[in-house]
Length: 105
Image 1: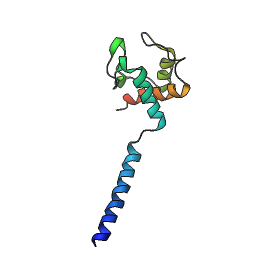
Image 2: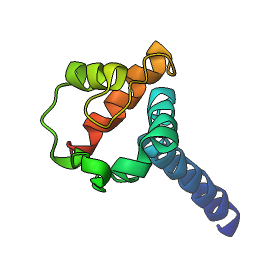
Image 3: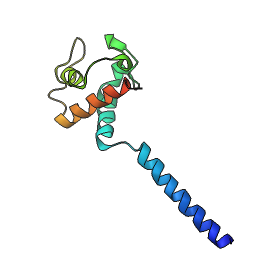
């Protein structure tokens, strides 16, 4: 009986851990958005979007659409510089989606 229980427990544990990994893993786009944000935006917005340094808004309370965030990343606004010549289109899309995610919590 013992010989059957341990393999069964192992299989059940393995199935459970795969499911958890699938649920909580970030997509490549989310990873890119997080990386771009952490490299370029945290000095004013903080890692959680709430820092509000140098007149920057609290990103957890933003009501901007995805397109509006993309435009601001590309063109800058007030003290925020333009990232048009620094980021690829994929990076702009990814970081804009990442910024929008702050307000979805």
